[in-house]
Length: 334
Image (tube, rainbow, N blue to C red):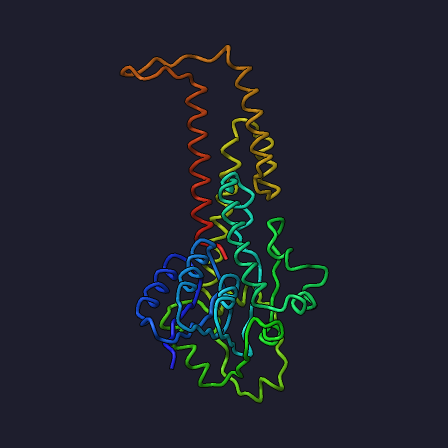
């Protein structure tokens, strides 16, 4: 029987560390079974997990117990044998940061170039694993090509059922869900202390005869039935809004009207907005230059004008915002 390794929950630094520790416990000649129930996560840690998994030279198998989204789905391209429960769900999209991160100045050429290299490697593995003709013939791929999925121009989400995943060759076998399997998954989820999808207990006959309908949950239902998830989402929204408003307020002394408009319209600051504020700030500084007072040096320090000190303060505030955004991206990436 193969040795089992779990990848349950969001992919982050903690998940990657636990994954590495689990791999270290596997003997060199042991057959392995990786069990997946994950919504994906950080591109950096996701690619690290793929790299660790790909270094294993013994025969590798994967079973999808619930969700295989993003990085978790691409892991299937690096195994000799793959299977999933019939209720499993797959999500294919390029490795990506949150949109606010990719639209910020923090998303520089070096960061973008690294992300492009990751996507190039993942795309090559995906093309080698699946039947591209059948993949592009799926209804949800109408008007799209595989290259579009991995393009940096946009993020395209393609959801697959277990049946569709098997039809394109992403998995080799579909396994009917049984109460004993459900109990096993619940035990794994509890041990992993993760907020992961756990199939409801049902019979094989019910699964065959009852169609699966996806019903959207209301905010009130989510708050009542899953308060921890609701509170986590609410906190993320509040933090994101605080960052958005803070980005605008950093330029309030340059153009208060434009700042107020950006905040009230719910707009996220773009690189164009920042460039415009910078231009206005330079122009404003030139007009006031004649009236600028010189601040006497202290203890032999360099003489600085009031404008220079103000600009340094604004630069520090902007750097604090970008640092916070980068850290948020590592936590909330999917």
